[in-house]
Image (cartoon, rainbow, N blue to C red; front, side):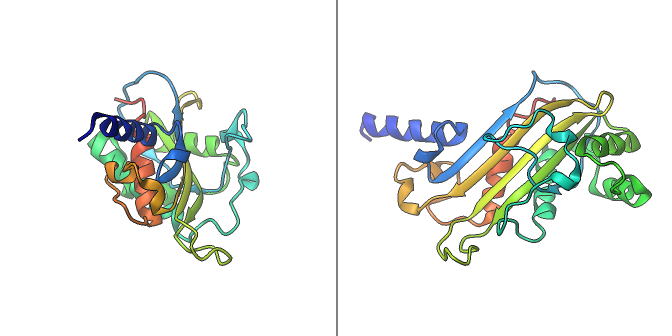
Length: 230
């Protein structure tokens, strides 16, 4: 293969995975995370996903996890029914592979919710996460929010609209209530002809239209790759 072509393909792969220049990729994405160096935890729990958007790059919020539930926004026509359950499952599967027995099981989380630790009394995501974490005896709790989960063609006025997914993950220290890490994914697949450099194929998604589930899986994997836990 010509060395110039090899260089272009390698560059395209790097841009796709880093999210530095989404307009040149077959999946238009913004995947980012912020946080400290890797820290060790004994126990971690995943709180069921919330539906709504706490913040965005163009509307930053100083303390998003302290936003009352009543002010969390959901995009119109953008959230598929059950998207919160789907993303909870996808994230849990990835965390299970990484943390094994250190991850609180879905059954244990369900028990905590049944015992009253998942009710609406705590009025912010931070307070609810700390309450859940204390109840389950964990070091950190991961909070997820999903504000868009749209299948291809889901927009009635745009029949050929592509799949689009937007979610964020936050990691809360149960002892202090502080947010120790944040990661987010905002992705919309573009036309297949825009993938001429092989970005999607290189990422294992192939040169084809993706479902929202596939796009979400790619996003979760991209974001959790930067989770600073060991």
